[in-house]
Each structure stands twice: as structure tokens, then as C-alpha cells.
Length: 160
Image 1 (cartoon, rainbow, N blue to C red):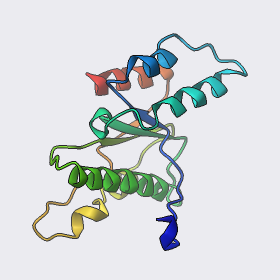
Image 2 (tube, rainbow, N blue to C red):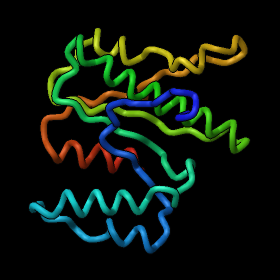
Image 3 (cartoon, helix red, strand yellow):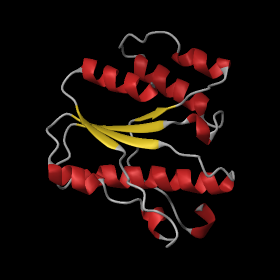
Image 4 (cartoon, rainbow, N blue to C red):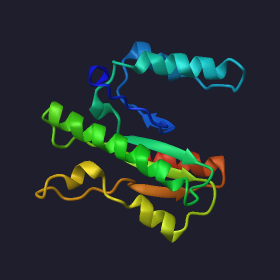
């Protein structure tokens, strides 16, 4: 894309769930992390170790976390989800795997309104380009969270 004077710049979703990591990469994530000044550097280094070492089918879901999705901010979630879903659709075609899919979830601290939910149910742009395709929702689900225990429970359920 660089040669075409095109760049993909975006805010990134907060978390990617990656399964089936090779042992040399998984060991970076295996022990409990105690928050300290070095934790962020350690996590960044561990994430760098994942690049190029997992297949697209090793990403069952992507998760974005927002403090709020007020009307001017909820479209950031839409954009993030649209890019993720479009990239997965591209990889599905590239690998000839029609079942390749990553769900996209949002967790929001402030109350989620019906208007918010309606915007997050927008279809993925790629799913609109062929009349024979069924439109695909951008955000598979949105969760209102108030505690870390809720986050842990939701992630465990998603991993289920």
C-alpha cells in the first residue's frame, strides 16, 4: 500500500484474543502480571513476539474498551470494527477459508443507550459490496461494565 500513496491509520482495538500460540511466544503471557513501571514494556515486548507467529484463525475475537460511547465517540468503535471485519474478510478470501471469522465486542463503562446499540449494529462495509452477500453486523455484542469481575466473567464466557 505504501507504493500506492495509501496508508491505514486508525485507533486500534484494545485487545485481541489469540489462541494456539507457539510455546516460545506463549511463555511471555503465562505468568500473572503485577502492575509496575515495567509491566507495559513487558506486555509491549510480548505483543511484538506474536507478530507473524499466529494464523488468522487463532483470533476468535477482538475487544475494544471505552469509558463512554457518546454520539461523537461511538463511531470510533464502528471504525475499529469495520477495519477488523474487513481485514478478516480479506484474509478469508486470501486463505480460501469461508469460515474464517473474528467476532468484535465492545465493553463500555458508561450506560449504553439504544441509540448507541443501533449505531453499533451497522453493517460491515465489505458485506455490502456484493448483492449476493448477507450484511454482517459490525459489533457482535456490546457489554456495559462496572467492575473488573464483570470484565473477567465476560472474557471467560467469550472464551467458553
